[in-house]
Length: 427
Ligand SMILES: Cc1ncc(COP(=O)(O)O)c(C=O)c1O
Image (cartoon, rainbow, N blue to C red; front, side):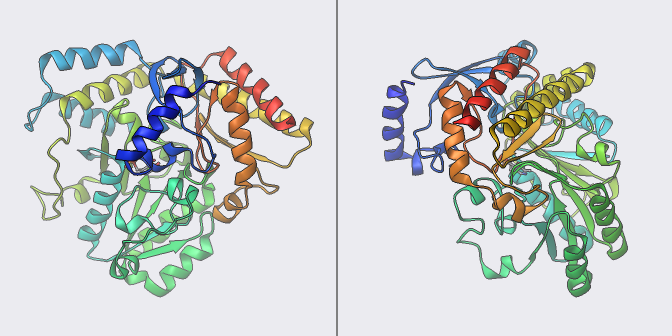
């Protein structure tokens, strides 16, 4: 595959941008190759500077659930740009967005828009502390909640991929308030409550983890978290930045049939533009400024351009429930195809999937938590990635991420991917 223009651009980029990228995993460092510089997206395909075409399973890391260049989303954006780009004043679209989110996710009675997933989780934790008057939070090893100080301790995603799951630069005084528990392990959570129970403001969790690869929480585990947080007067915070409107219209919480106190969103609610949101029980949300004392603000929060793309996306999802059925069918087909290929190639690997989020782990054990995920052979993944890439299949360049299937993926895309996967596993 010719990547000459991308290579030249990457060399240039590295002179002016740390690592040549504005977010670490994009640099393909763990894969050991140059990243393609992308120029165009259409449906399930993306195209790079050298004119190569790829079937895209990164989907902008989740937001593009409808595929690239969805006409209704583009029309909404064009319309909005012709009318106004931004005011920093209230607009009707923000009301519509808030109403729609509260309608689709019943645990959310009020919602505040922000500009990224990081802002959503960071603000939700501040609110949990402000509301409960407690200081500590529990997070799970291998879960990623963005790059705010409290979360970069045994974090997943790029932090895990690049070997710095706990980042330098975070004061000890901050670190001591983040308690780490094991995913899907009730006892590890109980132990922390036994010691620190009176000072735990909340538990934050990816209900279906995507940032150590896809690892679903067990139903009993989620039930336990709900019970123990109620018992101790702590808040249960679902980080649905990735799973919100992805694994189901009502998010992961609808699959587990549980009501968290607060929920964080991002990715899909922006339709591809930078958006985040956090919401939950009215009584808790009323503690946010200007009605309450917990301060949080944003110059571009709820800006009309992002709202137009997000609203257009959410309305399509709401009005076409068959989309989730379609994603499930394609997901199931891809999973089965990969599992068959694993069996036929006689290799050790595991596939985890929830709806349209899927990860192939190169490990010989079932993956139920961080230590299982970390047992994966990342060198093997890098080889696998490179083979697939050369077949025109664009996967996340890290073992610890999810492949995202979009509504735009065709049967043919899935068949081609299964075929390429067969070759990769045999090679
Ligand atoms: C579950 C989860 N939470 C939070 C974030 C942070 O979102 P952002 O990158 O928009 O700050 C991410 C990003 O991948 C995520 O997957």
